[in-house]
Image (cartoon, rainbow, N blue to C red; front, side):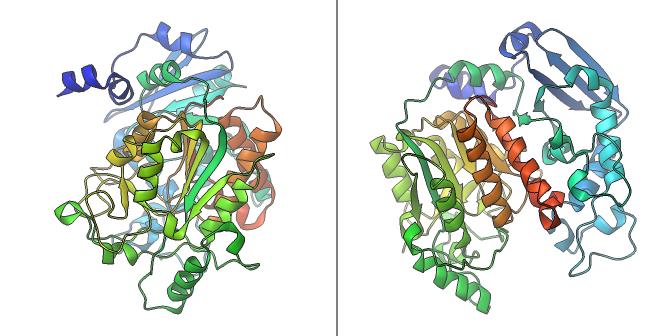
Amino acid sequence: MDRTIAAQFSDYAALVTKAPIAIEDVQKQLRSNEAMLLFTTTSRATFVWTVTRADVRWHAAELGEKQLIEAVGALRCGLDAEAWLDKASTCAQKLGRKNSLGADEPLPFDQERAVALYQALLGPVARDIDGKELILVPSGPLATLPFQVLLTEKPDAGGDRTKVPWLVRRFATTVLPSVSSLKALRQVARKTAASKPFLGVGNPLLDGDGSSDLSMARAKLARQIQTCAAIPPQPAQVAQRNLRAVDALSGGTADIAQLRRQMPLPETALELCAVANTFSPVKGDVVLAGDATETKMKALGQSGDLAKYRVLHFATHGALAGQVRGSIEPGLILSPPTAPTSTDDGYLSSSEISGLKLDADWVILSACNTAGGQAANSEAFSGLARAFFYAGTRALLVSHWAVNSDAAVAITTGTIDAMNGHPDVGRAEALRRSISALVAKGGENARPGTWAPFVLVGASAM
């Protein structure tokens, strides 16, 4: 099967196969302002290879897989509120607390661990990476942690949260599924021929659980916002996009009733329309509510119209591989049809995504958990990245946990603004500037759980 795929779908094979690649070939692909770091974890240590255009180094951090799982798990407890909600949660134990998190208590981020992890993994090569953009190839537990939350030095006790020395303040970062994917992506990358700036897809028609005033109000509002012109002066209350387990894809199609019980997301219309309006002189296009369907996406793909957009932005619920019960694929939830069919069951899976024809500079996945998962059958970056790469995009902006919609608006629009205002700035640096600007606002914006979910996967430069 591998030989058949390599022969018939060579570009896809180059993206998904972790084939050995000579250091010299990696160096030829790197720019002078870039450094690639490959992390490989064993039971006793984590080996870090640092490759620049002029040099290569490696060192061993005394962090075995078990220690790394504990460290990353503890850090995620200070980033992702969902980590505390499971009855089997061990966050309190990991952080040395006697009690669980209070209802209005902020997430307790372990700064000491964030400093220690930076010093162990990146400290020995601090001089080599200084002033460079970092291309990260993580594996194991590190694939579930956004590196921008590491601390480059110990922060001042009780100091200004806007001045905390997060890694994102010093380094622009990009993540790759494998070392060989660098060469594959840069070899197939070409200047886009797309003539339109932006297409946003979101605000799927969902009902919620139907048992709370909030879900019913949000479902009503979602149905009212069919276009950007229909957005009310005061948007709906923001809710995180937490995917609830659904009994789906039984018999090859999703359980429509269960998909519809996901929380409606009317605020995603605000997010998409705000990003669309940042483009000039031609504004971006937005597909919402009843038009945000699998049928619509596949029709645009088959007609070639989807390939006319340079940026494609999905703002909806995202599901990891295995998170939707009965499915082995990750995917995105769109507006469910009246009755499921083999071509439209309301769930755009990774295999269906790979069949879309794109010519996008990048795809933004403003949906929870599109970067990866903790389940044993959820591979890093969830397979969605590879599917979009094969479909014809150069880079993705994906999220590690449930996204706060206000933060999603600020980060995505800020990234687009940075790129529009500074054409010489690549995607990674634009994202770094956007996140830094949000942190500088202080308050809830400065908390790492708010700004840290988003990571860039794929080609960092334009």
